[in-house]
Length: 521
Picture 1: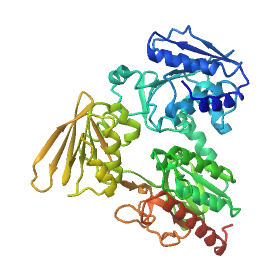
Picture 2: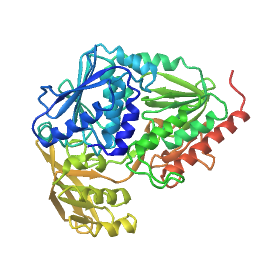
Picture 3: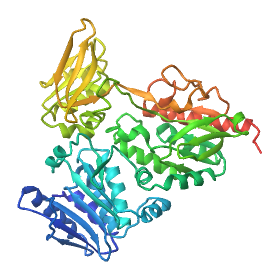
């Protein structure tokens, strides 16, 4: 089941297990149960503190629970957690065995004090790079609070459940039998949704913080670079972000960052956060900024207002809020999100195996998505608004070699249709003739670019008609003390390396502004 290298790595990790626990497997006579048994036997053979029992009677077979002796831990894997979920398995084993997690102390304390019975079911796929974050967040909660029950379900292994629950995107989470959420989430975001008193406590704690010298809004490459450069100046630095790593978390492969020949988005995002945490930076994650108030209107310091009611103050602010996938904005898109309308082919592609799908967008992201999907699905329709595909020629050449891809150029998407809660067709019209075409299919992947996350600024800071923050070569905006960097700005070329460079520029400019501007007393 595990190759020699993986066995050696896992054995080394399991040396950190200090508390005995059991793995209780529910198996049948099928091939997948045999695979799981082999995996669990390998694990049990690596530590004298881990015991394997095969007398489980759960209805989902194959599956297994992790049960620390003397506790009521309720964590089950209805999966053979390899692929992207191998790390989730390793962490679950370590945490169950008493190895302390790296989660902040206040997060662990909040988990332990949850006072409701929470039964989570998370559907994932082993090829999904977004799923491990949610699996690990929920595993952490189950291991540290006996009132939290978590079942991790491989949608490919339990396809009938996927069909019955009409799941068309992963990760998808159910709580106490009802739909809870879809997509990547941090443990802080999950806690915000289930801990009803958390927002008020958070707001009070945040508002009590002393003013910052530099407050970075956003935790992507631009925000992380800005925080590192500011912190290295020895000044009080904070980062407030909805999701550390930003859009990088949704990127499967990064192969064009100088000095890093190859990595994945989640790995790079984790490295960014760790690098920032190496300095004395106050990271305030899972927080949404709703307003920026200029210094002259806020008593001398810039004011940043949060969705939970908290208020932060700073001498300078660096806006690095990034961008998000652009919606196609046609009837049916919002209605069928996660029910056939998807934005991540790497995450959700396996759910459409053997089905007909469409990719809207003929740029690099769209053509890369079509090429990836062609290896999984029955047929791919690429719908591009312009008369020609906009992707790099090498990608276009590759696309044209695939027998199960049809390209529709100069076509405008007009509607996404569905029935019984699921996508069943896509309409588009020819921009030259006006003729309308309807294609029967079960999935639509939207890949038409990005829109900056700047709506909360209103007219406080100058923006273009596209919503991009107007900056000069130093990253300065039209508001004194406010700087901006990365994909949310007019800086050309929305690339990770460009964002990181502009973030460092903004931080150096903010520092220069501070030493030339009298401090407000």
